[in-house]
Length: 144
Length: 144
DNA sequence: TTCCTTGCAAACTATTTGCAAAGTG
DNA sequence: CACTTTGCAAATAGTTTGCAAGGAA
Image (cartoon, rainbow over all chains, first blue to last red; front, side, top):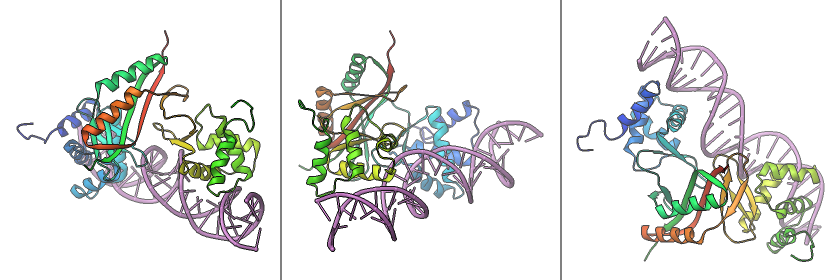
């Protein structure tokens, strides 16, 4: 992230497609670039609108289809927060959980090794093996 | 819960409706009885099918509408587990989280005060006040 | 040139709603 | 009786899919 070639992880995402034997189309390139910017957790429609600005011919179906392949390849994560539509996130860093700001819809990422460990313990005690989990906090900014 | 009148919490749920000035109809009585049996976390369709056995005239809309009022009154909880449709649970006991068996769809309830506390701490550190939260573990039975 | 991908429209799943008829307090 | 609730069908939101045309390797 010092010399700005391909701005961040767009090339990374393209590599995922290429290695899967999939084609790098104009619309995919556009969508990947938006995802790679990261910083937020857009839903399909937001992604579609941003992509349309670059390439007005893009369709919502293509956004959905692209999200599906990338998710299958493990390159992005799909979240379904309380109520709303699915929201997507470029899966580069390590695992984390989410705090959703109820007033703005903003998402704050966090992680707690202690909670992760406790979850493992609980599952083990109940006779289960965790395959995945989801921890979401819904709250509002504290005004002091 | 010693003398079994109205089998468990069905009367309790009826009281919620009555106190809200709502009417106790035949179909609501049927649905409430099913919810009060508790033990599992049925979705609207399952509820509808079970209720239909008792009263074939019941409609799916009524199931949804009844879930909505009960949820508004805080008498039941609605969960949207990964992927599937909303599933409902009679909210009598204390708060708990869920472990979903990926093979059977069964739900195991658990709670951890330590995790609850850690969540509070995290939210506070991030400058938020928790309004609600959701912790779900998805896993499969451990075979030894 | 082959096979993948696209846009569009139609299909789908889960849930909600308008309305006239039926039921409850 | 007055007002609520119901069943039905139609509407909605979010997402997926069939298909013929267009595009990447």
